[in-house]
Picture (tube, rainbow, N blue to C red):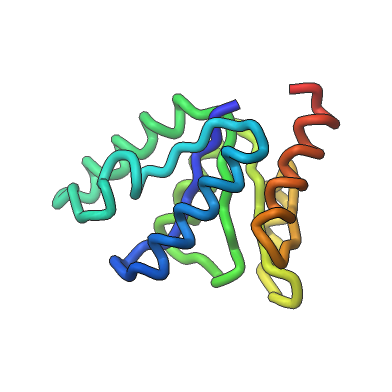
Length: 136
């Protein structure tokens, strides 16, 4: 299963490390990880035309089997659009939220799986349990 990891990135090294860690948690669960920011943009602004960006994002998401979104920081715009695209394509959406963080319950309505986590191992474990339950 190839998972499109959608993540916030504004150039900070801390955020880059967070993205890499999320991708590693997916990989450790036995899934193939893909992250547009990392794999297409290489952590730099590559697209000047927003329409071109979204066309390419849609193409990449089509090639994935599921989407993973962390909603712990109340995402806006980009990640929400990617979640909407995945929902429209009827792809499983894995919603992550740190324990003790409130998030909009609308995400529960699109989630194939909600993982409340404290550590990256919690994410890996949750994804592995999903694989076991769904016989993927």
